[in-house]
Each structure stands twice: as structure tokens, then as C-alpha cells.
Image 1 (cartoon, each protein chain N blue to C red):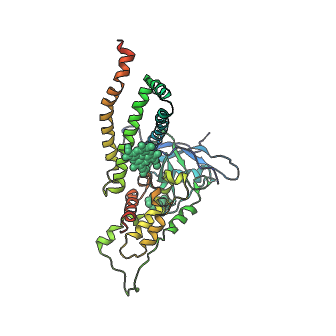
Image 2: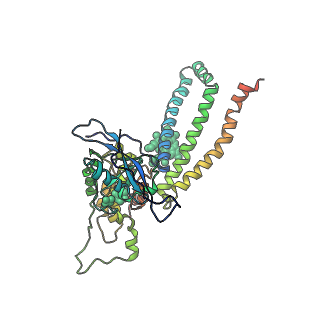
Image 3: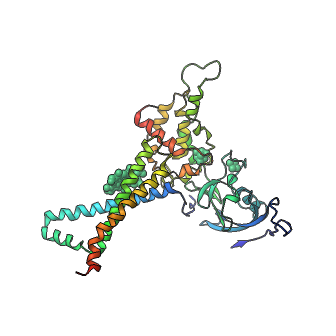
Length: 129
Length: 259
Ligand code: HEM
Ligand code: SF4
Ligand code: FES
């Protein structure tokens, strides 16, 4: 077969929201995979478990946690949107509107979410007490 | 590389006032992804300069290139008026019919990038092998399967019943939808949006009795459940068919077990 031209398809909201849905889905899957492993460790060796959990208490991991929260939140909200696209008779018509609605909900949750989740880290890094 | 054989002559309008009644031509760069299976290992973009008017179509630009600059440029077209479905191609990264895309709707200050549709075997330049696409369509039994004795006159249908599947009758088999689908790009076995639209046309036709067979085909592994609702098909359809909606209706019919 002749080579298929490899230029990116430009797509629109529907395609990019799906790309993000798949990326967040796979990312959350890998997080859960690691999380099952580290949690299972408690039954093998509680000391090692504590050491691993201790190693998570760094600013970088904290920001990763925010990223994970954002990913799960997007995946869940968009998942509801996709369910409505498939099962609500007007879903396909309003799919773009629904994407804007979930984007707003995402921002509204993530701003305070970011604040409370990283408060501790910022205090540690810059608070100086 | 840039081939420029056409001299660019702007309309000889006097520079006095911007007379709106005289259309102004302009030069536009058309960047075509070329491929000649006899000599090329890879596709490559080739630039052409063509003189166009705002009301010209991308198809006119391709004609000008083929007729005046490079006769080897290969593409399919027939009607030139959006009805035969021959000239679906990727124009600036989106599937469009060349005969329905006007210069005035594109950014002509940048090169217009024209490529073959994705996911079907590339034969030459903008021509792909459409056979797998038509084969998928044939699989959904796209013909009326009436029940009962043949009536002496036409098969009567209420306006309401006719409206039920009106949208999916508009398909011109251009493949813009199927080749815009990310699922189809990676899984050529997927029936693709067009075949589902083609099936929808008959599944929801009150005169037809073959819905069960078509639904069975579309319930298979490569059927409707492959759809990830990216809406690329709906955005690409030159006939404005609400394809994702049609696919959702087929999914519903399968889940509910009734039409
Ligand atoms: C929070 C609740 C969740 C909801 C409401 C949800 C919803 C959905 C829906 C509706 C789909 C189908 C998407 C489609 O048809 O294209 C989907 C796909 C997917 N989900 Fe979730 N999901 C959730 C949680 C998760 C979790 C925890 C994981 C990871 C373990 C995950 C991983 C995936 C993956 C990998 C896909 C496939 C994406 C694709 O096919 O493009 N989801 N999710
Ligand atoms: S549904 Fe639309 S995009 Fe798809 S083949 Fe038919 S006319 Fe072309
Ligand atoms: S040439 Fe017939 S649809 Fe464009």
C-alpha cells in the first residue's frame, strides 16, 4: 500500500476533546496501576510503604497530584458529555455547548482545587516558618 | 520548490477608486501533496502559484494547475457542483469537496495545502482507492427490502415517515466523513460513518423490512460501537448530514431492540 500522507488532521472541538479524553483516560489508568502497586506494598512491608509514601511529599509530586485531579475531573465530566451524546436525543446537537459547559465547570472546580491542594506546598516553599 | 509559470496580471482597473464592481484577482500559492507510485517512495508537497478570484473554487485552482502548469497532476472530479462526490480531499487539514470550497473562505495569504483523503490506499497525487469504502457500503445492504406482495402502484409513505430518514438520503458517497474518522485511520475494517448513514437511510424507512439484517451487520465488532463520537464526520460532510446523530440513532435502535 502506498504511504498515507502523514499531515495532522486539523479537526475541531469534537476531535480534540476526544484526544484529551483518551490521554486522560490512559494517564489515569497508569496512575491507578502504580497506585495499586504502592498500596499493595503495605502488606509486604509497612516500613517500605511508609518510605514510599514519604517520598511522595515533595512539591513535584504535589503538582502531579493537581494534574491527576484535573485529568480525572476532565475525563469524568467529558465522559458524562459523551454519554449524553449517545443517549440524549438532543446530545449530538448540543455537543459543542456541552463541551463549553464542562470546561467552565472544570475551571470553577480547579481554581479553588489548585489553591487548597497546593497551599501546603507553597507555605513550605515560600512561607518560611 | 516553487513553480511559477503563470504571469500574474491583476485586473486592469484604474487606480482611481476601489471600484467594487470590478472583481480583483490575486495570486495564491497552492501546495499539493504529490505522489507518483512509479518514481516516488514518499509523498511531498509541491507549490504552484495560480491567479484566482475570490469566487473561484479550489477545484478551479487544480484545473488551472493541471491545464496550464503540470498536466501530470492527478485528481478525481466529475460534476464540479457538489453532487457526484468525486473530489473529496483534505484542504488545509480538513476534508472538503474541492468544488464546494471557495477562495474567499480560505486564508489566501498563506499556501492552501491540498492532500488526499486519509485512510484509503493512496494511488496517485490526490487519488485514493475507493474500493474498500464502497465495499463497506455494500455490506449494509443499501437497497430497499420491501415486505409483502408487490403493490400495483408506488409504495405510499406519509410525509412524516419520509421525514424520518430524510437527512441520510442526502449522501453522495464522497467519503469525506469516513476518511475524517480517527477510528477508520487506525482500523480500516471499521465500516465507517458513511456505511452507517447508508444503513440509516433504509433502517428508518417505513417501507423497508430489512432493518434486522442491517442492524446485525452494524452490531458486529467493526460496526457502530467503534464510533468514539469525535464529530469529525459531521463537520466534514459536504451535504450537512448530521452523521453523529444518525450513528447515535442506530446505536439506540440496537440497544432498545426496536426502531
Ligand atoms: C470518573 C468516572 C469516569 C467516567 C464517567 C468515565 C467515562 C468514560 C466514557 C463515557 C468513555 C467512553 C468514551 C468514548 O466513547 O469515546 C470512557 C473511556 C475511557 N476511559 Fe473513562 N470514565 C471514568 C473513569 C475512568 C478511569 C478511572 C479510567 C482509568 C482507569 C478511565 C479510562 C478510560 C479509557 C482508557 C478510555 C478509552 C478512551 C477511548 O476509547 O478513547 N476512565 N470513559
Ligand atoms: S455522509 Fe456526507 S461526508 Fe459521508 S459520504 Fe455521504 S455525503 Fe460524503
Ligand atoms: S466534482 Fe462532483 S462533487 Fe465535486
